[in-house]
Image (cartoon, rainbow, N blue to C red):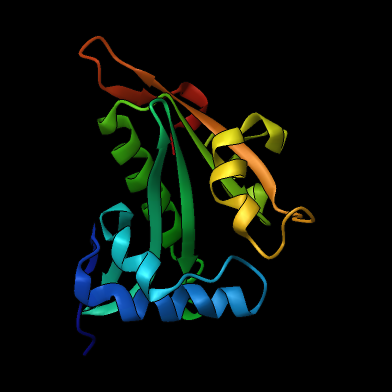
Length: 172
């Protein structure tokens, strides 16, 4: 007899930080994303959402506001054993919804896997169109200026109430 499991997408909490760091840095060790310090994760905990199943953290992502109309979708990761189950979609959908609720107009991502983000309406752009990111964070990175991440952006348009909604191509 099989027991049903419960998948939950929720805002991250302080107790998640050690598990977040282990998952994110595991992908970073394979050069698939950037390493994150405990300090950085604690300082930005409100940006993060997680997917868990029966208390086990299976995925993570964050929406980080960088300017009045712009946020970065970052740290999207799904545990290897949970990939292919739609958890990445759950994370991106939740992060884009958070961006919409904040009233943001654009969300960008820097990625090595553009085909994943294209499914959500992201389009490749020149990194120079993201000066807040480049001069705020990229310049501090060990890979700068020889980074080979691909910059992508997705529109998030406001509705009549002032809240945003995802553009037609950005509907997950």
